[in-house]
Amino acid sequence: MSAKIPVGVLGATGAVGQKFIKLLEDHPWFEVTEVAASERTSGRLYGDAVSWKQVTPVPEAVRSLEIRSCIPDLKCRVVFSGLDAAVAGPVEEDFARAGYVVLSNSKNHRLDEDVPLVIPEVNPEHLDLIPIQRRNRKSTGCIVTNSNCTTMFLAMALGPLHKTFTVERVFMVSMQAVSGAGYPGVPSLDILGNVIPYISGEEEKVEIETRKILGTFNGRTIDLADFPVSAQCNRVPVEDGHTESVSVKLARKTTAAEIGDLLRGYAGVPQELKLPSAPQHPFIVMDAPDRPQPRFDAAQAKGMATLVGRIRPCSVFDYKFTLLGHNTVRGAAGASILNAELLKARGFLG
Ligand SMILES: NC(=O)c1ccc[n+]([C@@H]2O[C@H](COP(=O)([O-])OP(=O)(O)OC[C@H]3O[C@@H](n4cnc5c(N)ncnc54)[C@H](OP(=O)(O)O)[C@@H]3O)[C@@H](O)[C@H]2O)c1
Image (cartoon, rainbow, N blue to C red; front, side):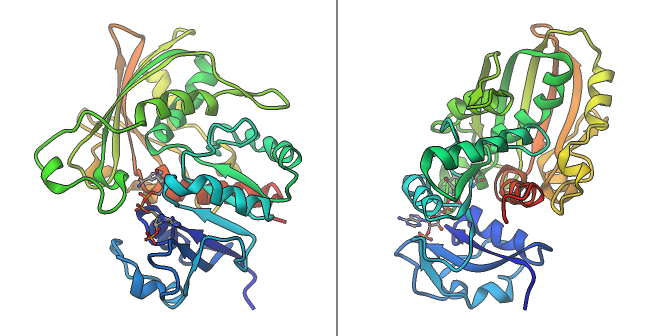
């Protein structure tokens, strides 16, 4: 019998759901035993129903699983959710109420007062909200969320900067890949040879989620970090990898070299605990003046690191730099899996 923890994937047929299935293949601690999706696909075998868009085949062990409905009668205690935001809210609550640990990618519960919004390298202590959530909701399960994909790379980089230099304000312009819109996503005639300067709700998510992640646990909830974030988000004809141009104002004087050294040498809790999905180095700082680039760099460190380049003085704020990250790996499924690994290491998975 397998000693691995059985897990389910809700929304298993979608873009994020497929990434879960792919990243969990051969995971040392977790094994996908249940897949669930909408009435459109439930009752069919996963391999027959899914419109598989990954570059490796559907894992053999998942191909023959029957797709279940998203109701909490799955034979596992941990579920990863890649559900459409239109349905994720109540479904994830039902699972948590029934005792499941829910690792969610959706926006619905990220800002709930008693729900952790976690990047293990930045704010692992926010998991201390779990006992409070369980008490508030009279439940033995819980919901733990990871951020919006664009927020991920910004908040990850701001984490060490805020701790060391105190961030005072942030300005960010994103160039976001089409895979961030799921499948079939943006029509090809809208995006080929084009830039769309609007992604519904994205700027608001980046501006508030960043402040929750960098906020302080006050024993009951999270006090938001006390600095403004201004985000401008654009969809560009790139397949995978979100690029972000960031300017920051810092309370403590520093140099571009010191910022580079801080990020290059940074290690967080996942690195100390050697969690299976943790990148060896959370940041890859690139010195070439024309990097990072999504085509060449987004998949470095198996898509789990944040790439940083072009750190230089800013004539409006103090410093500016370029960030890049793999939006469906570290920006979505990979982030949830790392959160689950931290939960296991902290004893929350029993
Ligand atoms: N794509 C990204 O890079 C990214 C990054 C971070 C966060 N997210 C978030 O992750 C979530 C999923 O995004 P996605 O891009 O993977 O979307 P997607 O490709 O459209 O997939 C949505 C999934 O939800 C299922 N679903 C839809 N309606 C349902 C219902 N009524 N009951 C149960 N299941 C239902 C679909 O199942 P069927 O196939 O059966 O219809 C499918 O499995 C969203 O909340 C999104 O905002 C996405």
